[in-house]
Image (tube, rainbow, N blue to C red):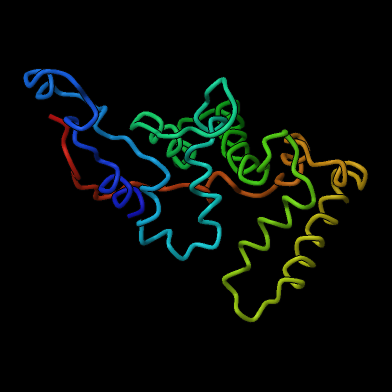
Length: 203
């Protein structure tokens, strides 16, 4: 449903984005899908999500868009949108072990980027705290100090895997892989597209 809402908001008339002739405007194209961060502001399913900002950030993070440059994109097109959604595709039954390993690492790299807000390749204690506090912010019975204690406890658990020095210096992606070892991220982080209806056409 989120995809449908976003597509509805982001479909931009080609005539508003092109200076071509009338005949050119009626040729089949896919550039009519252009989405900015503002398009996410009016999506009902994101309105009350405690990590809404992280989700929006992830869609425009050039690391997730597999671009060579770093930072955030101003807009994403339909190809970019599909690139982001590919991180949520389910396992294919014919995947071999090498493909499954790459599949898993791609999903975890996406999650890693959500924590690594300053794009330095490491997750600091403060960055980890921020995510946990945001996740728990929707619970009215949990105070901020309690959320911080939960985050600190999770980092201490990470320290038992990666080593205390490494945790305080910042968790690398290799450490992050160790922390998620044994957790079935392949099936937990996926979206199945069923009974999809055509939302709009490009003419």
